Figure 1 (cartoon, rainbow, N blue to C red):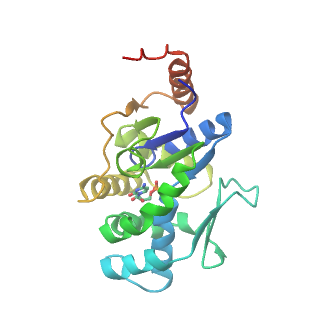
Figure 2 (spheres, helix red, strand yellow):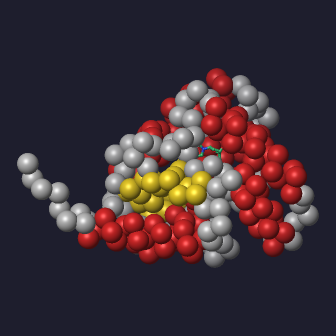
Length: 235
Ligand code: DC
């Protein structure tokens, strides 16, 4: 068996998916694509235009018509990709707390998800890609060669977010971060379309007590072991 051409990484917010995916993409020379930015771009544009994120028809129309571009990074400021909406660089704007607060509502609209499926599949099917999201292994790329579902307890994930924010010099409080994560998980896991759950053939990794290096090594081992597995006998 050769290297997996498509790697799907799903899991709840702040489980370490992006860190893992970026490192895998770098090690394998693959494209890294964080699909959450598409939902974030729609949410950002809705807030800019004064549209209600709860209005499914309006959000669906927006997702169908919005010009969202995800490109290789143009600046060395910690970004993995550029995200442009309507000719504006919104790479960091889509990470703002107002977007965090509304993005799960927008991502739960079936029409929005439908509008964003094709662009994700097109990129995925080109291969040599590590794709990150919530429904990559279940809906977007059900034939992905390797599916990882990265999980961690809510408390562990809130602790990581808290320390990251403190390192950036932001004044944050742990209890609010924990509450916001719990609410996002609830919305992502309970929505009717493409809810957050591991694909039946995903490798589930619980990362409580594991640092980013350990998770990366575990997945690289998995890839190496699959590479060296004897070919299955032809019936
Ligand atoms: O990973 P993130 O925090 O950037 O995701 C933002 C939101 O988008 C989150 O509520 C989950 C949702 N999302 C999704 O529903 N499906 C994806 N493939 C990626 C993200």
